[in-house]
Amino acid sequence: MVKQSKNSNLAKDNTLSKSQQLDIPAYPNSRPIPTEKAPKGIQILEMISNDSWEDVLTFYKEKFSERGWQVFASNELAERGSLSFHPTKDETVTVLAANEDSLTHIRIYIQA
Image 1 (tube, rainbow, N blue to C red):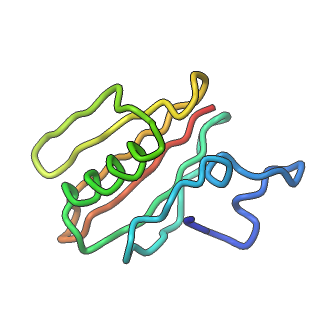
Image 2: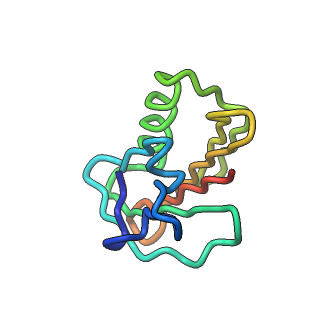
């Protein structure tokens, strides 16, 4: 699991964050980076990796498919792509991966 600060995964009432509840894995060999402030109801996880953006999306597609999550939207452009999943009927997880300055920037949005 990606941890960005000591208590960043705990909600104000000390319950588990959405990323913990959904057990969102960190991409292997990635490094967490500071995350921008997310709008209410959205949690953002950010990492960087030396692997290609295609490898990142393949990893998350395989991991989430193993859990029975189905891709409901995908997009590929030059040097970037995204996949969106519904882990439950009320939640959406979107993985964005983009080549930036010879690294892959990974951003995961979790919306409940």
